[in-house]
Amino acid sequence: MADPDKATFEIGIIGAGEMGLLYAHQFRAAGWQRVNVCDLPSRFEELRSKLTGTGINVLEDGYAVSRRSDYIIYSVEAANLDKVVQEYGRATKVGAIVAGQTSVKAPEITAFEKWLPQDVHVVTVHSLHGPNINPKGQPLVVIRHRCPDDAKYQHALAVLGTLQSNMVYLTATEHDRITADTQAVTHLAFISMGTAWMTQKQYPWENETYTGGLENVKVNMALRIYGNKWHVYAGLAILNPHARRQIKQYVQSVSELYKLMIANEREAFRHRIHKAKAFVFDGTIQARKPILLNDQVMDKFSLGNIPRELRKPNSHLSLLAMVDCWYHMGINPFDHLICQTPPFRLWLGIVEYCFRNTEILEESIEAALSDKETHIEDLSFYSATMGWAQCILLGTFDGYEKRFNATAEFFAPRLNEAKRNSTEMIRMITQKTQTSQD
Image 1 (cartoon, rainbow, N blue to C red):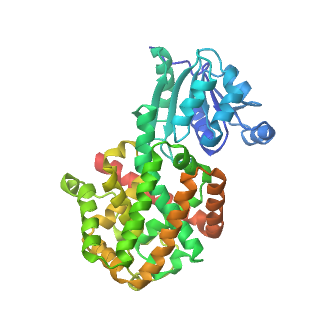
Image 2: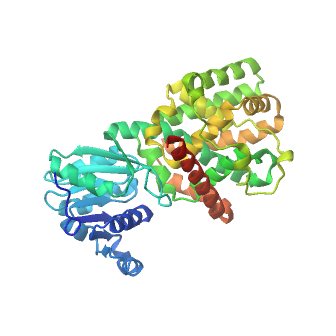
Image 3: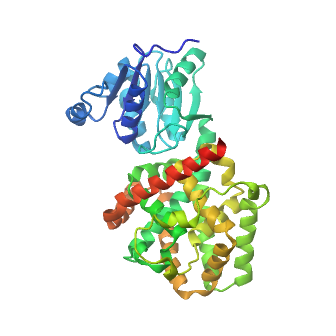
């Protein structure tokens, strides 16, 4: 089957946020001559001025994009997608292909089925990276939901292929289950870390407990989340039908482990941690090279100036509970690396580093059981986790936004630096992975 003509085939993007513009520039650079974008009508002049000279066509609204484009990508927040598709879906060109970029597909597919004409195809996507990461070599989920015409499907693949991503072919249900398994718990852990530090009015890089290579990664990755838009994480947590079970179990794991800590139930605590470790990390996984780079390399990413020799051990309760959660749900995160995001690979690397380094793991267990200062620190994390989980399980986008932005504001002076650090970490990890595969 012939690929579509790059000179005449029109690509439309509704929503000119960071990801929408990343796609637009990527498609244009790959030689597609007709790339159409729009945003809110009130942003038309601003967007047209911003994209002057790029060769990207800025149109007035989603009607204009939908009427003329052959492959239309909705690049809007998951919480707003239904409303936007309701508004513009009926204008979709006959025989066009439609996709969405949201990180949770159940509500997206519902919106497409509800509002798009029946003579429209649906081949939707999810790029498993943010707008500051080059799509080349990154996972790109492709979901052939409603596309009986093989020629149309090949047209969609031809367009997406110019991103040079590694395509992963899933159903919408498979996508949501895997993203919930890999991201729901890690997001909750790291946003709770940030809120715990904020409620203590404490910058972690000024605390001896958060000094050292492993801690540098934790701090930078937590702040990386808070340097992004709140809706990126809220949609997955609140709208993904598979995420609720993971969130409930993570809260239970944090709660039960913390109770064992303060009760000094040494044997029960140690048994539980090692049982979870055996499920996730032991066996054939031992033969695999660790994800994370060595501690000395990670040292250079500190946001503070506390010498390594002053480092104080801590429990890493957030990481211990993550593995305990995976164990109790029967999830092995390494089974889902096919759908990994670059941050998830680092998050998983942090957990792996803690559990596969015997010295660090034993130090963490001992701190959890014996150090009263650690108990005080972890009380803040426990409380933050309970608060975030309640907000998510109630489905309150407004509450999520307020909690998120309050924490982000506290860390605002260091968010850009943390973003640069974490981006460099991701680059190093990606480079290491590619080298090991060559």
